[in-house]
Length: 152
Image 1 (cartoon, rainbow, N blue to C red):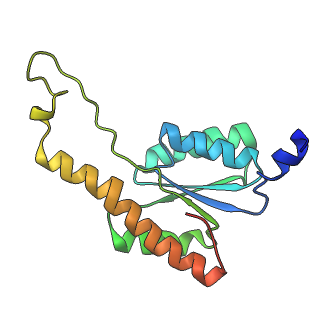
Image 2: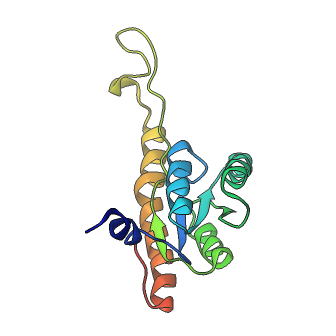
């Protein structure tokens, strides 16, 4: 198969792709790939300021209309339901959100060690990384069913 034929199979024309944690570095990389393939990147993130910065950067690079943003707390069912409603059609969901705690510290028992990791930090990481992914899949998936399909 020629290279053009292979690349054609990755086209995302008229495809809405939701990216959780979309305002972060990896989320923006996902968004760039989606936009370059012809799709619309819809960034879901809890940080309004980071969303605005990401939207500005992606819009200046790719033009307006290729990217949208929705402020959402993926650990909240109510917030996700509202985000699904605001988003409209969802063809693809990329569960990318994570807290990414910075493991730093010096000494034998610095903050970078497991012994120093606080239980509330652990719970929050699970809430975002696991529960958030579950809830997004649950509600975005329900939206996809009403549309006749989608990809998570």
